[in-house]
Length: 183
Ligand code: SF4
Ligand code: SF4
Image (cartoon, rainbow, N blue to C red; front, top):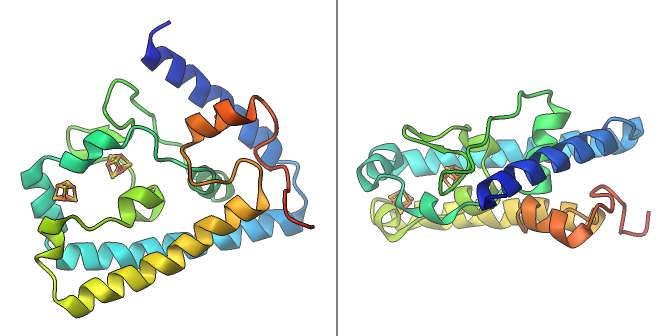
């Protein structure tokens, strides 16, 4: 089996597994997931506003998504749970691409759904477009965002920021949503 086929198969299996773990959760646990994912989404929208102030759309188009060539496995449990908890149709991943969310027109998911590594990053080119105060504001938001993503890592066995494909390998079919905190 090719590496792409293997990744596609692992992705499909892990989506089925996480959906199967998410659906029977009690209302309180689902609410925690939903609220935390929505907080993540809101912060990511604010980061995107600063990215746009830096003329990010045009800059990235001109650079032809240079940094996305390094992003083949950035999606984490929090990203998948946002889709599941909000009933958002899952994007169709293309594992032949450098990042499975990359299309010829750029990233196929909106900023509020992107992985942490993508949204928390200002390259030198973008940073150069911003006033120092805006850069400082960006990284203040990034710290808040990091702490929200970390809350998944502190709560669930599969919650680390490591991409889901690697997490699946580490867990070896154990539950992603197994609580590892004191609750
Ligand atoms: S963030 Fe920077 S490196 Fe990445 S695509 Fe945009 S301009 Fe290029
Ligand atoms: S998720 Fe989107 S922004 Fe991140 S590396 Fe992939 S295509 Fe680029």
